[in-house]
Image (cartoon, rainbow, N blue to C red; front, side, top):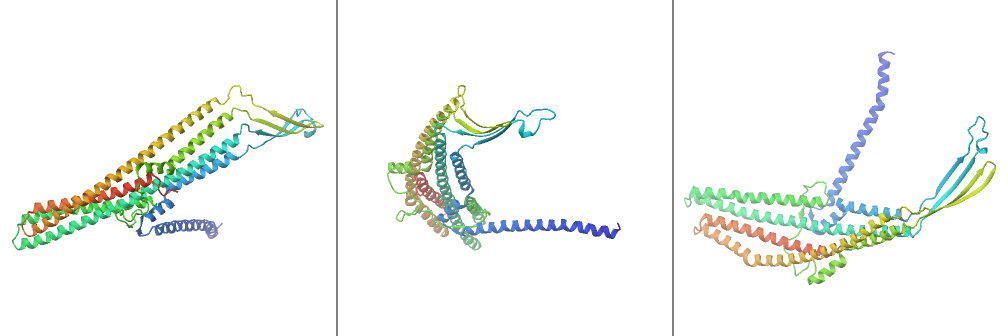
Amino acid sequence: MNNMNKTHLLGELHMPVLGLRMRALLSIVIVLGAIRIQAQEKVSDIPSALTLENAIRLAVDQNPTLAAAKNEIQAAEGDKIAATKRLNPAFSLQFEDYPVSTHPGPFFDVQEITSRVDYEIERGGRRKLRTEAANQALEAQKLAFQDHTRLMRLEVERAFYRTILAKSNLEASKSILDQVERTIFLNRVRFQQGDISALDLNRIEVEKLKFQDDLFQAELALRNAKSSLMALLNAPDLSRDVDAIGTLPVDYQNPEPGLPPRAPLGALIGMAVKQRPDLAARLQEKGRADTETLLQRAIRSPNITVGGGYKRNLTDNTVVFGVTVPLKFLNRNEGEIIRADAEQMRAVNLMAAVQKEVQLDVQKAHNAVEINRQRVDYIKSHQLKRAEEVSRVTLESYNLGGSTLIDYLDAQRTYRDALRIFNQALFDERISLYELSSSIALGVQ
């Protein structure tokens, strides 16, 4: 074969390979494009101006932890279907007495052939008990999903208002820094006029670093808060910039959705006992453990296997039937019965523990609401206005030469700290209200 023919043949061999590579590359490009489009669609589902209600809805729809909880419900549904099924019959075909000789004769004429069908009959109502236990496990899993949703809602509320808190602190830091920069500008003018020394000017410019650092810390806190919120919403880009729409102060005159009713502690605990899905799930688990105990006791009764079929004995055609009964002398399922009894007592103890935990959750949340209300009222009526007034008066006095630079800087720091403490108190008050709502399972479906 000459070189031209070889080249032609190699070209024919490489063309299909090249085509396969091109198709594979095209498939990869299409898949990556689809993933990118899907990610963009998910990003577009998150509005740039985000409310708390939208954030909760997006978290319930998209959070992978809740999706995993839904998968557990699907698995429990599969267990329920499996529990309702009856046992399968067994078919057997048996050949016997085939002679080993030189000329045994026709295969089907010189041996016994038996074909039969056997079916095991479950006794003691096992199938009914098994189905009931699986159904109770399914209901417990559905209630567990509701509890996951309750806790996820609270996490979103915390992350959302942590963003509001960080934004408020950032605005306060910017405002104070702007005021300090205006003071520095005025002091430069005063220095040029000979009213202050270079030492005073340099000192206030050096002190500006602390207020500038506060601004950097506030910006970092805001970015991290937004990223945490985006993670709960399962956003592809955790650096996505959103504007959380909300305010830290609670308006008691116009109650907001999701806040608890103003009721006595005993009434709130009663609501929690009736509505908490984790407590209801434990009740279902106790019922399942009770049913499992009955099932294990029913297994002591042996199943009966009945069967029948056709037997051909050389030239004779006959009918065969039989009954098989296990002799449960050595193992009467004692170990599984003991285990089921222990699981039953464990379910009772866990339910009692959850009852006490629910009561403690409501008690602690109620305590937090009362203390944080008092804290906000105290700071608002006694400290914040005084710190603001001291800052304003000190600034005016300093500009007129009646206060020292140290007095002015101390007043600004005090006002900054008072604003932060007040914002934190507002945040804690609001979150304690959401925790109280969560402890009584308000709005959980």
